[in-house]
Image (spheres, rainbow, N blue to C red):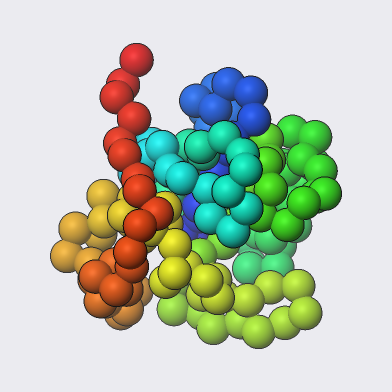
Length: 159
């Protein structure tokens, strides 16, 4: 199954956090990161009094079903020491399942497509690196981008 994952971090060495997270995903059994966007520096959304984030979008192929992938992502977050104290607050790593191919899932623990992806420039802009025509599993994301105001995102220069 193909997944579109969003990774964000704003605590510590943000670039190293993203690189380590990608390594962790690639270490999952029968799971590979097959493509990735550039890294973007982004303004926080929902809770402004915090550092800017680094965000990236990954295209991942895995044998895992969506709930299994969610469990793997939560496990990676826990391995980083992620604490959920302030909603939309600072985090060492955040992994969200944005799409699981064309699946639509509404369970207590998982909503796919991610319910707020269309309101988040830090997800939509990097997705254009992977889907330049704006079509993501049959969904045109361009109208969502055009409606958004603010939420600045900037590609991070390679170091």
